[in-house]
Length: 421
Image (cartoon, rainbow, N blue to C red; front, side, top):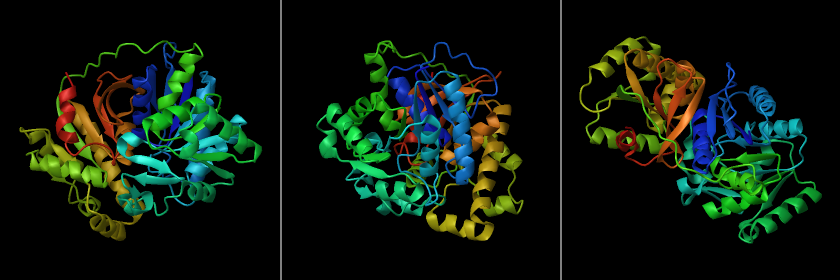
């Protein structure tokens, strides 16, 4: 075991596990702290998927420290706290408090903050996070129903969420190479800075930052920051050269799509799927709350479809989401949908569905929590940050694609199936 990672949601964990796998690390993703002992003798990296992004900060800290204890017990040498590339959080956390707690537990005085993921349009310049050509605060993330992001300054965001002294390493330093970045780290340490936001516009920047962070006990950021970490272990003689890709074999069975995300990307993917003739059923949280729509009825509809891969979705425009939250309460509106789709997943598995796409981080967490695999084996990449996975530790394995709401091209729901045998 070389690298131990803690991810604050399920799809983010899968995204990270894919990144490490692509860079030649044998990677397993666990769903929370494993209940059964896993055989890790041939594993280079373990990614622990938590559901802590929107929990109260104290709960998120406790869950993250428990994951850290597990990863230390299985021998991880370096640790990564992975959060969303759009820094999804509230003024109270949870990124700042968790980072602070992990630093204290590991006895380290310096870490980096780098959620950049250029392949998906997330970049950092002068400490400000961009989504495509827009500042984070001007992007659709400003309307996120759980973690609206109204500030793009990572320095301000991190300082506001923690007691850490926050500094900045600009791209002018990054482009000078790993030695210049490592020197900036040491200078920051001497100045008493503890969390360094690091600019990154390209994958090459991330590889430079990763090399400079070889000696760092704790790294924080998005999955992109993992690009440069495996090569550090190779240079130290701890990781074999990258080999051939492992063959991925998906179980035979019916296919289905469940979508709970209300992001622009997922709504666009739903529109593209419906336009292509995919049968679709839209869930109304008010109908669910009032008992006018039950899981059994949605299952009957899904299993009766004979053309295309059926899509069941709750994704809605921002005004619809706000109306549902006003009627039901913010937390109840979200939990109703999550519980409904998790029950759907159980019913679909019992009915012979073995290939399932799930859109949305919270939705994916609820679905995988219900299906309860011990771990996920990482398979082929569909779009940047989204692989097919195979559930481990069950009698009836399933192929799952767990998609962050913001990820994927418009035709994601249509093309994903082409990668399965």
